[in-house]
Length: 357
Image (cartoon, rainbow, N blue to C red):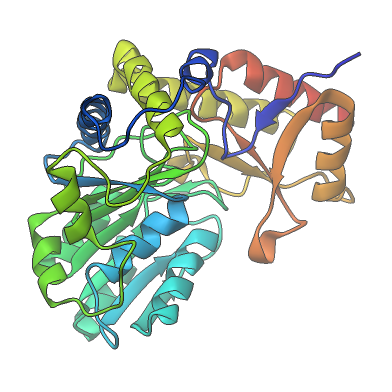
């Protein structure tokens, strides 16, 4: 019997059938009038999800490409920057920044904890930083940062606020303009319910001031080039046209549901997952007050290997769970509950876990 797969990881996520159907359309001229209309619709739709009137760039890349693009368009070699590191993707910001020879300081918080505002402010008092980098949602630990409060304290010290919301956007509220977020990165393969391949970066007026002085090398990632072409309804280079078809349809789905309803749905799925796991006596990495609406990190029972448990659940029930990363590799497993995910999907995942622990 053919076994159905339940992709319960935090990305790539499951894709609605109506999105998949529109993606099989024939190619069109990416410099022609039909694509101009699609690009306009998609850009306006994504801006609404970001809650921004800032410039919004759509880049053919994974979320990491968006993170790199954010960095090279605002910094020069040797700039002093601070990373609020609460997990593997905070560590990724550190790696990219060091690759481009920024002068990087980081506050490494305990895994499973959110960035603490008082600790951040104490660090900001010690040194003048050009920019501060942080995660909205840390995928590796299932932790949601209080971006609003963190941004407020960062802005007090006149640093650029750069936020990775790759797994956070749409799963939890993020108000780019209202909270004064200068650069925000997201990607298609998470709550946007699309295959991997597109990243999105919003860019504020203050970020453009930084751009004017930034000297890090950039060509493919150059936002000025992207803006010049976007004003004509084009990309600088050949875009993945099929993904734009899908993105246009995904935005229609989000608009039909309403953003606030989408946030509530993600909260419901999070609470359902956490309640079910706790009822099995399993320990969760993040506490309820900082728990991600996108993914839940779980410790297996004593004496049970996390990866061994994941393998067994996949083979027997077709439920795909994510593993731990960095220091948590082999120690935890993770359940994604974002994007095109329903209560029944979470119930099936919980039932499979319960049968095997």
